[in-house]
Length: 396
Image 1 (cartoon, rainbow, N blue to C red):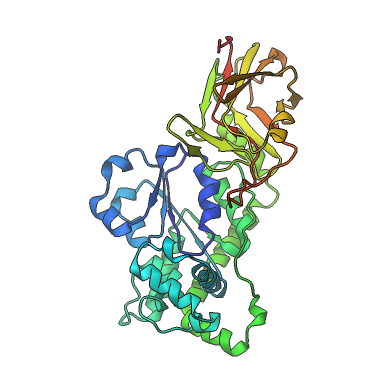
Image 2: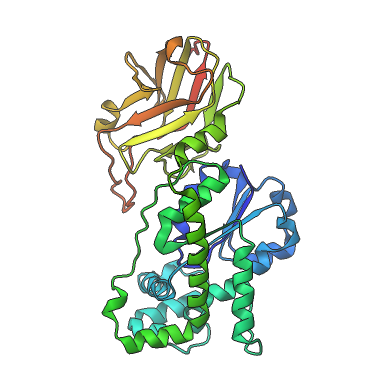
């Protein structure tokens, strides 16, 4: 998998992008930068040796450092008015207890006490920066008033052209298709839930003109990002992206005799939640859709055993009625073993359903997914911590 550094400009659908890509990396290969200046100063070189996906709220000054020369840079740009509205909604809905710094508390307090119009047009030091050309600032690292606007936007757009991939939030699916095609991984089906409760048409033309005036550079940057996206979308038109990705990932790989997959490792599949863990092991829940897929390399064609380790289920009804399909064949005759609360599903796979010259596919179908009862709004099915494909029987 390529080394990627993601310049996450606030309120540009970063969670969607991060969750879509992290599954392709082992857990210790992903690093979330919380304090960019401190982190870059120390460079954490021992961590960089193993890190392959870096993300966080940092700008060009961090991403362009020489320690990241072999990383692919990606960024997403958003319509400035929508982004400012999203920032306002986020701050207004935040709890003071979640604020890390006094500056965070100040921004939250201001948003809670303001209308959106007041927030978007504010002149408060420490808050105004988030609603005035912040996307351009991330790509130039500075908005020095002595530098002409023409020079600032020229610099920002030139840095867009240096990116491995540039996305547009309002065209998220097209943007993700381009990104995943370039990375050679499965397409990510993303439905971005925007927290903007009003449309642009709901605001007065005078207000929109004022927002455009103070975000003139960001609107120019957004137009440049869309132009780049348009050129690339044409090149992908009609391509079977999923098929191409699977061929890149697996075709030509020597068939394996045995395979063990732990879920703190990278996985190739669809409809999985982020990795979780306790002191003993890591797992991922299926969901939010009912059908979850996992792809494996070619396997030597012989009878083998499939063991699926399940530490958690969203409810017993989902667990009792879950179905498994291997290369399209429903698996019957499952043996369920309980190892101190850890379920192990044990199947015998006939050699005629094993693929030696192509990838192998496991599908997991639950009757539904549901949210836990603790305020977690994820839709979950069953959790899996390990999968084994062995040519010998394991005694439990």
